[in-house]
Amino acid sequence: MTIGELSRRTGITVKTLREYEGMGLIYTAGRSPGNYRLFDESALWCVAVIRNLRSLGLTVAEIREIAGIYLEKPDEPIGPHVSSRVQAARSRISARIEELDQLRRRIDEFESARGQGLADGQDPDPRAADPRSRTKRA
Image (cartoon, rainbow, N blue to C red):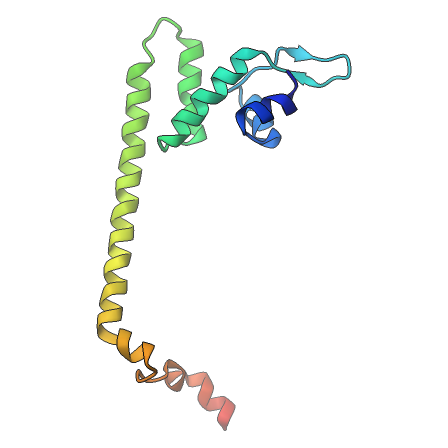
């Protein structure tokens, strides 16, 4: 199949498929007489694996690492490598959730202190404290 057909069948853009192919994550089955990339059914499997790993929060770099191990050490179980990358993704996600929780707490505190005053226009206009506003008036 051509890269366009692979794109239609997987829902992945042609540009992304070219990037995956350039990184060695999917392989062409050769070129057509018109020099178009051709892919076989294994490309569908590769894209499905990439999509699944990305949905778990793995980066493309982590997927490349896993693919490298998979190809370079075919007798070595891949599961422990996938597991460690999934755990790293979980840690990143947990850290991001904590950052977002902190942001939500700051928003809650701000709204508690000023929220109603801001909403009804009773809170002092922050522009009044802007030193630049004084120079414009002078």
